[in-house]
Length: 166
Image 1 (cartoon, one colour):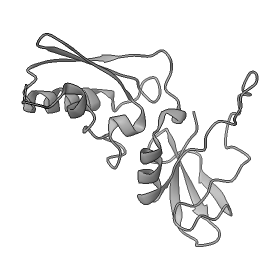
Image 2 (image 1 turned 180 degrees about the vertical axis):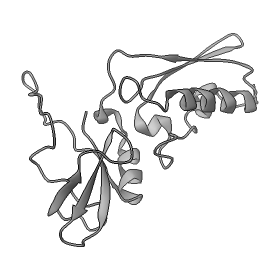
Image 3 (image 1 turned 90 degrees about the vertical axis):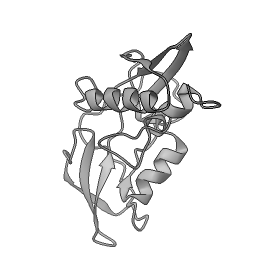
Image 4 (image 1 turned 60 degrees about the horizontal axis):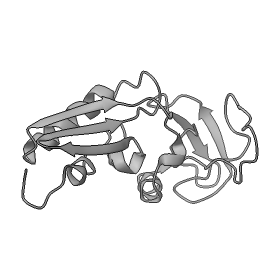
């Protein structure tokens, strides 16, 4: 181990392979980092079951920990509770918007009962990350990855992606 550097601090620097402006901590995927003797165990939760980026996340975490002097590192996948876009940090939401990707909207608060399941796009407009307008339209429910959709702003005419609410 490098003097003064914790395994958690190292894990918090690893970026998401599909949204490289975010760390796994920003995205809320990084759940726990435990040090037990010389062994580091990192727990991560996929944004959705079957996420193809999980192998890359695991490899990137192990590589970063090895480089920082933690030779015995293991990554575990934790499926419960399921990841939610509510886990994206405020800093992560700002980084998404700065990169031209509309961050997910939060769940309505306060939640006083079951949350209705809405399949398909939300009736609430997605705000344009470029100009802030709510006059946007859905171009494609499926973007570059399954967790993003493609939109276009009617005010500034710029296309942008939106991280879908889960």
